[in-house]
Length: 417
Image 1 (cartoon, helix red, strand yellow):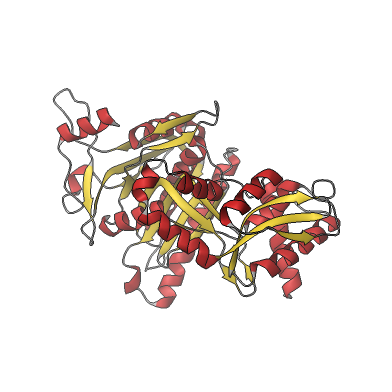
Image 2: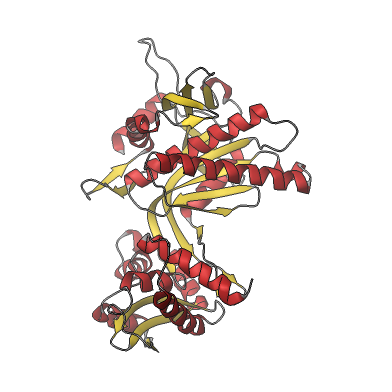
Protein backbone atom coordinates (compact mmCIF):
# COMPACT_ATOMS: atom_id res chain seq x y z
CA UNK A 1 0.00 0.00 0.00
CA UNK A 2 1.42 3.36 -1.00
CA UNK A 3 1.78 6.17 1.51
CA UNK A 4 -0.79 8.34 -0.30
CA UNK A 5 -3.42 5.57 -0.27
CA UNK A 6 -2.74 4.87 3.41
CA UNK A 7 -3.05 8.57 4.26
CA UNK A 8 -6.32 8.84 2.32
CA UNK A 9 -7.70 5.91 4.30
CA UNK A 10 -6.65 7.51 7.58
CA UNK A 11 -8.20 10.85 6.69
CA UNK A 12 -11.45 9.25 5.57
CA UNK A 13 -11.65 7.41 8.90
CA UNK A 14 -10.92 10.68 10.68
CA UNK A 15 -13.77 12.42 8.91
CA UNK A 16 -16.19 9.71 9.97
CA UNK A 17 -15.49 10.56 13.62
CA UNK A 18 -16.62 14.15 13.03
CA UNK A 19 -19.34 13.93 10.40
CA UNK A 20 -20.52 10.34 10.84
CA UNK A 21 -20.44 9.78 7.08
CA UNK A 22 -19.41 6.67 5.24
CA UNK A 23 -17.25 8.60 2.80
CA UNK A 24 -16.10 12.07 1.78
CA UNK A 25 -16.32 13.72 -1.58
CA UNK A 26 -13.15 13.74 -3.63
CA UNK A 27 -13.02 17.51 -3.13
CA UNK A 28 -13.11 17.20 0.66
CA UNK A 29 -10.44 14.52 0.58
CA UNK A 30 -8.22 16.78 -1.50
CA UNK A 31 -8.78 19.72 0.88
CA UNK A 32 -7.97 17.51 3.87
CA UNK A 33 -4.78 16.34 2.17
CA UNK A 34 -3.78 19.96 1.52
CA UNK A 35 -4.46 21.00 5.13
CA UNK A 36 -2.52 18.00 6.44
CA UNK A 37 0.45 18.76 4.20
CA UNK A 38 0.69 22.36 5.44
CA UNK A 39 0.26 21.37 9.10
CA UNK A 40 2.84 18.64 8.75
CA UNK A 41 5.44 21.23 7.79
CA UNK A 42 4.75 23.23 10.98
CA UNK A 43 4.58 20.05 13.07
CA UNK A 44 8.16 19.33 11.93
CA UNK A 45 8.34 15.57 12.61
CA UNK A 46 6.74 15.96 16.03
CA UNK A 47 9.02 18.72 17.32
CA UNK A 48 6.15 21.23 17.59
CA UNK A 49 2.56 21.21 18.87
CA UNK A 50 -0.40 23.21 17.62
CA UNK A 51 -2.05 25.06 20.54
CA UNK A 52 -4.87 26.79 18.66
CA UNK A 53 -6.06 28.02 15.28
CA UNK A 54 -8.64 30.30 13.69
CA UNK A 55 -9.94 30.60 10.12
CA UNK A 56 -8.78 33.30 7.75
CA UNK A 57 -10.26 34.32 4.43
CA UNK A 58 -7.45 32.69 2.47
CA UNK A 59 -6.30 30.02 4.94
CA UNK A 60 -5.86 29.53 8.68
CA UNK A 61 -3.75 31.12 11.41
CA UNK A 62 -2.05 28.65 13.76
CA UNK A 63 -0.26 29.11 17.09
CA UNK A 64 2.58 26.59 17.25
CA UNK A 65 5.07 25.95 20.07
CA UNK A 66 7.96 23.48 20.48
CA UNK A 67 7.49 20.44 22.70
CA UNK A 68 10.28 21.50 25.04
CA UNK A 69 8.47 24.75 25.86
CA UNK A 70 5.31 22.80 26.67
CA UNK A 71 7.41 20.56 28.94
CA UNK A 72 8.89 23.64 30.63
CA UNK A 73 5.39 24.95 31.25
CA UNK A 74 4.50 21.61 32.83
CA UNK A 75 7.53 21.80 35.11
CA UNK A 76 6.58 25.31 36.15
CA UNK A 77 3.04 24.14 36.85
CA UNK A 78 4.37 21.41 39.16
CA UNK A 79 6.59 23.90 40.99
CA UNK A 80 3.60 26.17 41.53
CA UNK A 81 1.03 23.62 42.63
CA UNK A 82 0.09 25.71 45.65
CA UNK A 83 -0.59 28.70 43.44
CA UNK A 84 -2.53 26.50 41.04
CA UNK A 85 -4.71 25.20 43.85
CA UNK A 86 -5.40 28.77 44.88
CA UNK A 87 -6.52 29.63 41.35
CA UNK A 88 -3.32 31.12 39.96
CA UNK A 89 -4.29 32.94 36.73
CA UNK A 90 -1.27 31.79 34.69
CA UNK A 91 -1.87 28.15 35.58
CA UNK A 92 -5.59 28.46 34.83
CA UNK A 93 -4.86 30.10 31.48
CA UNK A 94 -2.47 27.36 30.37
CA UNK A 95 -4.79 24.59 31.56
CA UNK A 96 -7.73 26.17 29.77
CA UNK A 97 -5.81 26.08 26.49
CA UNK A 98 -5.27 22.33 26.66
CA UNK A 99 -8.83 21.71 27.89
CA UNK A 100 -10.48 23.75 25.10
CA UNK A 101 -11.04 23.07 21.43
CA UNK A 102 -8.23 24.13 19.12
CA UNK A 103 -10.63 26.28 17.08
CA UNK A 104 -10.75 29.75 18.67
CA UNK A 105 -11.73 33.28 17.73
CA UNK A 106 -9.11 35.65 16.27
CA UNK A 107 -9.27 37.65 19.52
CA UNK A 108 -8.54 34.55 21.60
CA UNK A 109 -5.67 33.55 19.32
CA UNK A 110 -4.18 37.04 19.70
CA UNK A 111 -4.53 36.85 23.49
CA UNK A 112 -2.77 33.48 23.55
CA UNK A 113 0.05 34.69 21.30
CA UNK A 114 0.59 37.67 23.61
CA UNK A 115 0.77 35.46 26.72
CA UNK A 116 3.30 33.13 25.06
CA UNK A 117 5.17 35.88 23.20
CA UNK A 118 4.82 33.92 19.98
CA UNK A 119 3.30 35.10 16.72
CA UNK A 120 0.76 32.81 14.99
CA UNK A 121 1.80 31.26 11.69
CA UNK A 122 -0.32 31.79 8.58
CA UNK A 123 -1.10 28.77 6.41
CA UNK A 124 -2.28 29.71 2.93
CA UNK A 125 -4.88 27.32 1.48
CA UNK A 126 -6.45 27.07 -1.95
CA UNK A 127 -9.95 27.03 -0.43
CA UNK A 128 -11.90 29.14 2.07
CA UNK A 129 -12.35 27.49 5.49
CA UNK A 130 -15.97 27.41 6.61
CA UNK A 131 -17.27 27.94 3.06
CA UNK A 132 -15.50 25.22 1.10
CA UNK A 133 -14.68 22.95 4.03
CA UNK A 134 -16.32 22.46 7.44
CA UNK A 135 -14.55 24.18 10.35
CA UNK A 136 -15.33 21.09 12.47
CA UNK A 137 -13.51 18.88 10.00
CA UNK A 138 -10.50 21.20 9.92
CA UNK A 139 -10.51 21.34 13.73
CA UNK A 140 -10.36 17.55 13.96
CA UNK A 141 -7.45 17.47 11.52
CA UNK A 142 -5.62 20.16 13.51
CA UNK A 143 -6.30 18.30 16.75
CA UNK A 144 -3.95 15.48 15.71
CA UNK A 145 -1.05 17.94 15.81
CA UNK A 146 -1.80 19.24 19.30
CA UNK A 147 -2.29 18.27 22.93
CA UNK A 148 -5.63 18.03 24.71
CA UNK A 149 -6.46 17.87 28.41
CA UNK A 150 -9.61 16.08 29.61
CA UNK A 151 -10.50 16.25 33.30
CA UNK A 152 -13.47 13.94 33.61
CA UNK A 153 -13.12 10.90 31.37
CA UNK A 154 -13.61 7.28 32.41
CA UNK A 155 -10.89 4.83 31.39
CA UNK A 156 -10.91 1.04 31.73
CA UNK A 157 -7.70 -0.99 31.99
CA UNK A 158 -7.75 -4.64 30.93
CA UNK A 159 -4.65 -6.49 32.13
CA UNK A 160 -3.69 -10.06 31.21
CA UNK A 161 -2.63 -11.96 34.33
CA UNK A 162 0.82 -13.59 34.07
CA UNK A 163 1.36 -12.25 30.55
CA UNK A 164 5.17 -12.24 30.75
CA UNK A 165 5.20 -15.98 31.58
CA UNK A 166 3.66 -16.98 28.25
CA UNK A 167 5.52 -17.69 25.01
CA UNK A 168 5.42 -15.00 22.29
CA UNK A 169 2.85 -16.92 20.23
CA UNK A 170 0.67 -17.42 23.31
CA UNK A 171 0.94 -13.71 24.05
CA UNK A 172 -0.20 -12.88 20.51
CA UNK A 173 -3.14 -15.28 20.85
CA UNK A 174 -4.20 -13.79 24.17
CA UNK A 175 -3.98 -10.18 22.96
CA UNK A 176 -6.00 -11.09 19.86
CA UNK A 177 -8.56 -12.87 22.03
CA UNK A 178 -8.95 -9.78 24.21
CA UNK A 179 -9.20 -7.54 21.13
CA UNK A 180 -11.92 -9.82 19.74
CA UNK A 181 -13.88 -9.61 23.01
CA UNK A 182 -13.74 -5.80 22.79
CA UNK A 183 -14.93 -5.81 19.17
CA UNK A 184 -17.70 -8.27 20.04
CA UNK A 185 -18.87 -6.11 22.95
CA UNK A 186 -18.89 -3.02 20.74
CA UNK A 187 -20.92 -4.83 18.10
CA UNK A 188 -23.50 -5.98 20.68
CA UNK A 189 -23.91 -2.45 22.06
CA UNK A 190 -24.54 -1.11 18.57
CA UNK A 191 -27.50 -3.50 18.20
CA UNK A 192 -29.05 -1.70 21.19
CA UNK A 193 -28.27 1.71 19.68
CA UNK A 194 -25.73 2.33 22.45
CA UNK A 195 -22.96 3.79 20.34
CA UNK A 196 -19.74 3.87 22.32
CA UNK A 197 -17.18 5.91 20.42
CA UNK A 198 -14.30 4.07 22.02
CA UNK A 199 -10.60 3.97 21.34
CA UNK A 200 -7.80 2.02 22.93
CA UNK A 201 -4.06 1.92 23.32
CA UNK A 202 -1.95 -1.05 24.31
CA UNK A 203 -0.05 -1.31 27.58
CA UNK A 204 2.00 -4.25 26.30
CA UNK A 205 0.07 -6.83 28.32
CA UNK A 206 -3.40 -5.35 27.92
CA UNK A 207 -5.28 -2.23 26.85
CA UNK A 208 -6.43 1.14 28.10
CA UNK A 209 -9.91 1.81 26.68
CA UNK A 210 -11.88 5.04 26.82
CA UNK A 211 -14.90 6.72 25.22
CA UNK A 212 -14.23 9.70 22.97
CA UNK A 213 -17.63 11.13 23.94
CA UNK A 214 -17.77 13.13 27.18
CA UNK A 215 -20.76 12.90 29.52
CA UNK A 216 -21.94 10.90 32.50
CA UNK A 217 -23.80 8.56 30.15
CA UNK A 218 -20.69 8.14 27.98
CA UNK A 219 -18.78 7.00 31.08
CA UNK A 220 -21.67 4.71 32.10
CA UNK A 221 -21.66 3.21 28.60
CA UNK A 222 -17.95 2.47 28.97
CA UNK A 223 -18.73 0.54 32.16
CA UNK A 224 -21.39 -1.45 30.27
CA UNK A 225 -18.82 -2.06 27.56
CA UNK A 226 -16.31 -3.26 30.15
CA UNK A 227 -18.56 -5.92 31.65
CA UNK A 228 -19.65 -7.15 28.20
CA UNK A 229 -15.96 -7.58 27.33
CA UNK A 230 -15.42 -9.51 30.57
CA UNK A 231 -18.51 -11.65 29.91
CA UNK A 232 -17.31 -12.56 26.41
CA UNK A 233 -13.90 -13.38 27.84
CA UNK A 234 -15.42 -15.55 30.60
CA UNK A 235 -17.45 -17.54 28.07
CA UNK A 236 -14.40 -17.97 25.85
CA UNK A 237 -12.37 -19.26 28.80
CA UNK A 238 -15.03 -21.89 29.52
CA UNK A 239 -14.94 -23.13 25.94
CA UNK A 240 -11.24 -22.85 25.12
CA UNK A 241 -8.35 -25.10 25.96
CA UNK A 242 -4.66 -24.35 26.32
CA UNK A 243 -3.48 -20.80 26.80
CA UNK A 244 -5.24 -18.92 24.02
CA UNK A 245 -7.80 -17.06 26.16
CA UNK A 246 -6.46 -14.66 28.79
CA UNK A 247 -7.30 -14.48 32.47
CA UNK A 248 -8.03 -10.82 33.13
CA UNK A 249 -7.99 -8.35 35.96
CA UNK A 250 -9.65 -5.00 35.34
CA UNK A 251 -9.65 -1.49 36.75
CA UNK A 252 -12.01 1.40 36.05
CA UNK A 253 -11.39 5.00 37.04
CA UNK A 254 -12.50 8.52 36.15
CA UNK A 255 -10.06 11.40 36.11
CA UNK A 256 -7.88 13.76 34.13
CA UNK A 257 -5.43 12.98 31.37
CA UNK A 258 -3.65 14.44 28.37
CA UNK A 259 -4.47 13.07 24.93
CA UNK A 260 -2.03 13.26 22.04
CA UNK A 261 -0.94 11.64 18.77
CA UNK A 262 2.53 10.15 18.59
CA UNK A 263 4.78 10.47 15.58
CA UNK A 264 4.62 7.46 13.26
CA UNK A 265 7.25 7.82 10.60
CA UNK A 266 6.74 11.29 9.13
CA UNK A 267 3.14 11.67 10.30
CA UNK A 268 1.15 11.73 13.55
CA UNK A 269 -0.80 8.56 14.29
CA UNK A 270 -4.50 8.44 13.45
CA UNK A 271 -5.34 7.06 16.89
CA UNK A 272 -4.59 8.94 20.08
CA UNK A 273 -2.72 8.04 23.26
CA UNK A 274 -3.44 9.15 26.80
CA UNK A 275 -1.29 9.83 29.86
CA UNK A 276 -2.12 11.55 33.12
CA UNK A 277 -3.55 11.13 36.59
CA UNK A 278 -6.18 8.60 35.52
CA UNK A 279 -3.68 6.27 33.81
CA UNK A 280 -1.22 6.58 36.71
CA UNK A 281 -3.94 5.62 39.20
CA UNK A 282 -5.08 2.70 37.03
CA UNK A 283 -1.52 1.38 36.69
CA UNK A 284 -0.98 1.49 40.46
CA UNK A 285 -4.33 -0.15 41.20
CA UNK A 286 -3.84 -2.93 38.66
CA UNK A 287 -0.54 -3.91 40.28
CA UNK A 288 -2.43 -4.82 43.45
CA UNK A 289 -5.53 -6.31 41.80
CA UNK A 290 -6.21 -10.05 42.03
CA UNK A 291 -6.79 -12.34 39.07
CA UNK A 292 -10.39 -11.92 37.92
CA UNK A 293 -10.97 -8.83 40.07
CA UNK A 294 -12.78 -5.64 39.00
CA UNK A 295 -11.48 -2.57 40.85
CA UNK A 296 -13.02 0.90 40.85
CA UNK A 297 -10.90 3.89 41.74
CA UNK A 298 -12.17 6.43 44.25
CA UNK A 299 -13.17 9.43 42.17
CA UNK A 300 -15.01 12.66 42.90
CA UNK A 301 -15.27 14.42 39.58
CA UNK A 302 -17.50 17.04 37.98
CA UNK A 303 -19.17 15.55 34.93
CA UNK A 304 -21.62 17.05 32.42
CA UNK A 305 -25.10 15.56 32.62
CA UNK A 306 -26.21 14.45 29.14
CA UNK A 307 -29.86 15.51 29.65
CA UNK A 308 -29.50 18.84 31.46
CA UNK A 309 -25.98 19.88 30.49
CA UNK A 310 -25.34 20.90 34.09
CA UNK A 311 -22.17 19.92 35.92
CA UNK A 312 -22.70 17.47 38.77
CA UNK A 313 -20.23 15.72 41.05
CA UNK A 314 -20.17 11.94 40.82
CA UNK A 315 -18.50 9.40 43.13
CA UNK A 316 -18.26 5.59 42.64
CA UNK A 317 -21.45 4.91 44.63
CA UNK A 318 -23.44 7.41 42.53
CA UNK A 319 -21.84 6.08 39.39
CA UNK A 320 -22.80 2.44 40.02
CA UNK A 321 -26.36 3.52 40.85
CA UNK A 322 -26.57 5.32 37.50
CA UNK A 323 -25.13 2.26 35.79
CA UNK A 324 -27.64 -0.11 37.39
CA UNK A 325 -30.52 2.16 36.32
CA UNK A 326 -29.62 1.74 32.64
CA UNK A 327 -28.71 -1.95 32.64
CA UNK A 328 -32.21 -2.91 31.46
CA UNK A 329 -31.26 -1.53 28.04
CA UNK A 330 -28.90 -4.51 27.63
CA UNK A 331 -31.57 -7.12 28.31
CA UNK A 332 -32.15 -9.35 25.31
CA UNK A 333 -28.55 -9.21 24.10
CA UNK A 334 -27.23 -12.64 23.22
CA UNK A 335 -24.13 -13.98 24.90
CA UNK A 336 -22.96 -17.26 23.38
CA UNK A 337 -26.39 -17.73 21.83
CA UNK A 338 -28.34 -17.11 25.06
CA UNK A 339 -30.27 -13.88 25.64
CA UNK A 340 -29.59 -11.83 28.77
CA UNK A 341 -32.48 -11.89 31.24
CA UNK A 342 -31.00 -9.45 33.74
CA UNK A 343 -27.75 -7.85 34.85
CA UNK A 344 -26.80 -6.67 38.32
CA UNK A 345 -23.71 -4.61 39.07
CA UNK A 346 -22.68 -3.54 42.56
CA UNK A 347 -19.84 -2.66 44.91
CA UNK A 348 -19.14 -5.35 47.48
CA UNK A 349 -19.25 -5.14 51.25
CA UNK A 350 -20.29 -6.95 54.41
CA UNK A 351 -23.83 -7.88 55.40
CA UNK A 352 -25.17 -6.11 58.49
CA UNK A 353 -27.68 -7.35 61.08
CA UNK A 354 -30.61 -6.00 59.05
CA UNK A 355 -29.64 -8.17 56.08
CA UNK A 356 -28.52 -5.22 53.96
CA UNK A 357 -25.04 -4.97 52.50
CA UNK A 358 -22.63 -2.14 53.18
CA UNK A 359 -20.03 -0.90 50.71
CA UNK A 360 -16.41 -1.45 51.66
CA UNK A 361 -13.66 0.93 50.73
CA UNK A 362 -10.09 -0.41 50.53
CA UNK A 363 -6.79 1.34 51.14
CA UNK A 364 -4.42 0.32 48.34
CA UNK A 365 -0.71 1.03 48.86
CA UNK A 366 1.62 0.74 45.88
CA UNK A 367 5.31 -0.14 45.65
CA UNK A 368 6.23 3.54 46.08
CA UNK A 369 4.43 3.70 49.42
CA UNK A 370 1.65 5.89 48.00
CA UNK A 371 -1.91 5.06 49.02
CA UNK A 372 -5.33 5.59 47.50
CA UNK A 373 -8.86 4.32 48.14
CA UNK A 374 -10.60 1.83 45.87
CA UNK A 375 -13.71 -0.33 45.67
CA UNK A 376 -14.27 -3.94 44.70
CA UNK A 377 -16.96 -4.44 42.04
CA UNK A 378 -18.96 -7.41 40.83
CA UNK A 379 -21.30 -8.01 37.91
CA UNK A 380 -23.83 -10.85 37.71
CA UNK A 381 -25.33 -11.70 34.31
CA UNK A 382 -28.35 -13.98 34.12
CA UNK A 383 -29.22 -15.70 30.83
CA UNK A 384 -32.02 -17.86 29.47
CA UNK A 385 -31.38 -21.60 29.82
CA UNK A 386 -27.74 -21.09 30.85
CA UNK A 387 -25.76 -20.75 34.02
CA UNK A 388 -25.25 -17.18 35.29
CA UNK A 389 -21.98 -15.43 34.58
CA UNK A 390 -20.37 -14.03 37.72
CA UNK A 391 -17.69 -11.43 37.08
CA UNK A 392 -15.30 -10.15 39.71
CA UNK A 393 -14.08 -11.45 43.06
CA UNK A 394 -16.13 -11.96 46.22
CA UNK A 395 -15.52 -9.62 49.13
CA UNK A 396 -14.48 -12.58 51.29
CA UNK A 397 -11.54 -13.31 48.94
CA UNK A 398 -9.85 -9.91 49.23
CA UNK A 399 -7.53 -10.39 52.20
CA UNK A 400 -4.48 -10.29 49.93
CA UNK A 401 -5.76 -7.29 47.94
CA UNK A 402 -5.75 -4.46 50.48
CA UNK A 403 -6.99 -3.66 53.99
CA UNK A 404 -10.55 -2.40 54.25
CA UNK A 405 -11.13 1.08 55.59
CA UNK A 406 -13.01 1.16 58.89
CA UNK A 407 -16.77 1.58 58.35
CA UNK A 408 -16.80 4.74 60.47
CA UNK A 409 -14.08 6.25 58.30
CA UNK A 410 -16.08 5.36 55.19
CA UNK A 411 -19.15 7.08 56.58
CA UNK A 412 -17.11 10.19 57.35
CA UNK A 413 -15.66 10.11 53.82
CA UNK A 414 -19.10 9.93 52.25
CA UNK A 415 -20.45 12.69 54.48
CA UNK A 416 -17.66 15.08 53.59
CA UNK A 417 -17.52 14.25 49.87
